[in-house]
Figure (cartoon, rainbow, N blue to C red):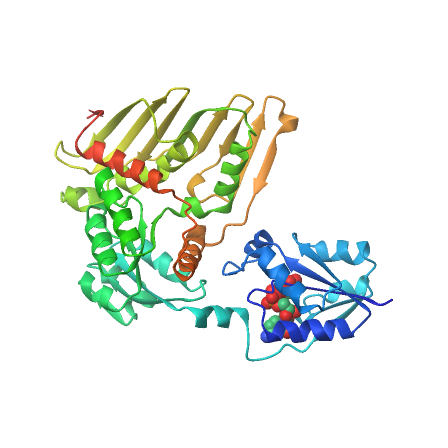
Length: 448
Ligand code: C2G
């Protein structure tokens, strides 16, 4: 019996896939098809896969061409499988020609002509093309624009900014470059908002009221009530509203949360998060302190994310210690917030006028998690125990700091009209609540 094996994602199964499977089957008597696991696809850069692993397996099974279906989960698994299943022929389309010649050491390698004119990514693009506008002043948008190119089905339509000179050529060449937010909404199905925090609520509300989907850099608003109102409007208008922090979309951070939930370090009793980045001193000297991101708005949401997602939002007490340029300003160049919970504590330090070690430390009754700087865009963390031989290290590929994953998740949510929230609504609201308390000076102590 001649045994054949082939592998693929098989997303949105189409006749190009089926023709490949038919010819693979014809090469022998028994065909094994390896369908790629979600994680494996993500690690090899395929972030736009629409269907779940189960859906893709069922689609391959329904063709009746596979005698056996397995899951491909890790780099190098093909060699293990060829040995394990005593394979005679490995085959794959000619788009991979040459890439698997090394398997000739284990079995015959056959490249089958790829079917031109069809691909899953083309189907994804055709099924929905999301016209996305950008809004904001920060050159962070240059990174965002570059990342959007990795996401199937998203096309940038323009930008609303008062800072066009700071933008990349890719942005400056967009069809609509305007200072008028309404004009941007005219040409977009959705907007990504990274404007000054004081503008978020009004812009998100305007976009939602016009039926546009919204991806907004946290904080969504500067008060709990406004945050709740925005989510209510999104529901009423059947629009997707996603609060974003790239950290929430990093696989390492997501897996870290799962390990904590599974009790990997016992009961969590402390979360300490530090985020600092020295921004241009000139910004501090402009004196227009109400026109800038302060530390609490620039870094607060990021540092608060693990605190609220791990310990919850029901702290019993907090103290905000802050250093501001002037008593009436919300431009703080350094702020520390300490939280007391019924059975835990947390502390965040944020600064755009101060430099410190940007690490995340989560302490538990059995061990602790150490995430090195810059933890907010990490691909790596350690779990450490009393006995160092028990320590474990984790690495998860993070392409583009997580921004492309945000966009892929958003595009999928809009297409399926179902949001897979990485930042829960109540967490969004808790973050906005801290902004609110800071601005009304609740629980705030000033240092000079
Ligand atoms: N294919 C094809 N014609 C197309 C599209 C795909 O012949 N128009 C073939 C591919 O060459 C591959 C199989 O169908 O052999 C599955 O394609 P994908 O689902 O895109 O998977 P891919 O990422 O190419 O997986 O490690 C090998 C990879 O897993 C192959």
